[in-house]
Amino acid sequence: MSALRFLTAGESHGAALVGIIEGIPSGLALDAETLHAQARRRKLGYGRGNRQTIETDEVRIVAGVRRGVTIGSPIALIVENRDHARWAEIMRVDAPEDGAPAARAVHVPRPGHADRVGGIKYGRDDLRDVLERASARETAMRVALGTVARTLLAELGVTVASRVVRIGRAADETPWRDVPPEEIDASPVRALDGSASEAMVREIEAARIAGDTLGGVFEVVARGVPVGLGSYAQWDRRLEAEVGRAFLALNAIKGVELGLGFAVAGRPGSHAHDEYEPGDGTLTRYRTNRAGGIEGGMSTGQPIVVRAAMKPIATLMKPLDSVDLRTGAAASAHIERSDVCAVPAAAVIGESLLALALAAAVLEKFGGDSLDELRARVDDWERSVRAR
Image 1: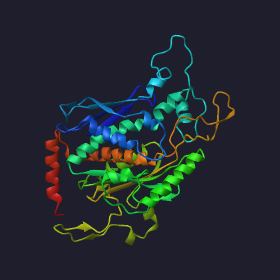
Image 2: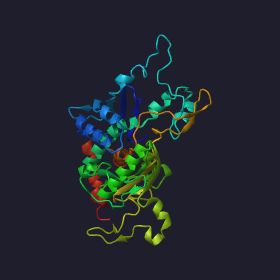
Image 3: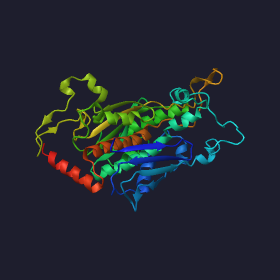
Image 4: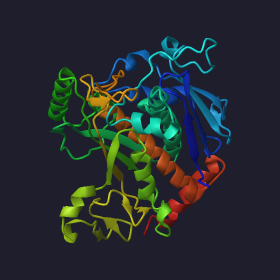
């Protein structure tokens, strides 16, 4: 059993999103404002829909924390959906006495969404039973749970940050540089380069006018990661496999790469690997980080660099062709309130996903029921490998 596990529950327009995370050591300082600060960042980005102005995404801690610190038991969180007030009858839990059909039922699936296959899998005629849970609204809770993980990592000296490198045809080719998170968040699309940011905004605006949507690529970087997380000993213990799974489980993500990723396939070996050289106070150090901080299934101590490709959102204001599942007749796809582009938000979500994967790997390697115990084990390990 994994040392860290979590679950979420809730529908997009249901009463609330619920999350439980188990395995966090006791003694970790944690408060609702820390969680809410990251929730606010998830709402960032040019091209978001008006739901971001409706929901506050305030996180309520209901279990696992006492007097501001974790106590070792499962941590339970709730994010109430403010928009539920307008959807209470549509999303009611109990059966109506008059047996009336649900309002706003959906029978025309959206190409690229979970609607059609989910309806088939679970035998639901009203596709709202699928799209409500398949919605990216669920990621509000994953960010909250990921914030618990990143708070733990921060106590061990691990930091996580992100940026957008492409939206549509506009790309930011600027190499990663360490800047205050507020500087990246200040960009309307969370890009490093100002001119690239402006080009991305123009791409999003053109898509909005056309009733279309845009995807892109974002990058997440973790620094201060201990050496030796993960293992080559079994396929399911390789760190990059866990990182890849975490990102591919995010809505609309169709590709994940570490370090040079797909670009390394076009290079000769002499320009693909990270050569060693004598270090200052260490036997070896890396000249480059082409591997993205993971070699042979294990963290190298270099920054872990992950890029993920996000497809355009499946709900278009100028809908794609579809079929009415009640009649089999051609129809325009269902329109549900949506964003034009959510890549900047996905980058913030990616920080939480990487934090969850790395926190699980840290706890698996070092263990510890309290933060003091865990920190002591990590410190001892760092001292033992520092000169190698």
